[in-house]
Image (cartoon, rainbow, N blue to C red; front, side, top):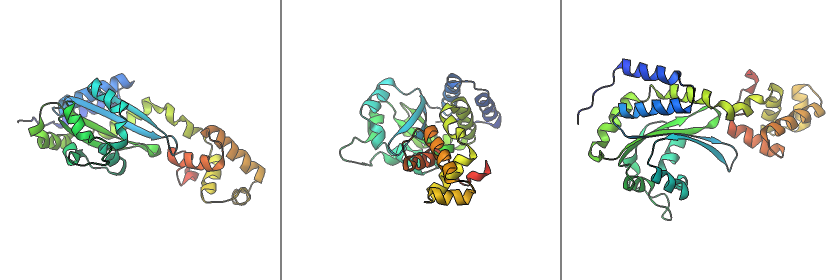
Length: 252
């Protein structure tokens, strides 16, 4: 199989096109062009934003077969998807064949084999890690090039990494609404939450910040309202998970 190398002009063109995107439809078009550029058929760009200890918000742009996506969602395969698990704790690209014979839980199907049977024969993913503790993946797949899997993977590894940072940055700008919560916290509210994370009492925080206990309570209550939480413990947990506080918070 002969694959034409992607030159610097190709990469520069697609990066500029990504930077000019105004909405998710534009991003989808760029993803489609990138997919063609690396001789694949399907793409999936997914970012998982932690909302709490038990709930996450998932954003997905893809052109995967609808039947596969429906089955994946209905069967809740995200709970046993090795690519999701891998992307959460790794940064290097991974070939799906790595997990083809793995079984995370005997009660669950092998997601890679299921995907293969559904037409996603060849696949590989690039883990993504974003601001505010989000993570996800940029995946590509093909329906009929199983014997070229290693070649496709190597070709993608040489050409996709320079594009990913621009893709993440502009996607974030377009879909920044979910991060508005974090920017709403004032510097004082962040400081109070950080010291609360350190186990400091309201009295301790008041002495550290040089204000009254009532003022500390006021800031923590305001932060609780903005974070949509019910108590200090939940506020701390959610602030950490969502990146609402990130040491050193005093830089803001």
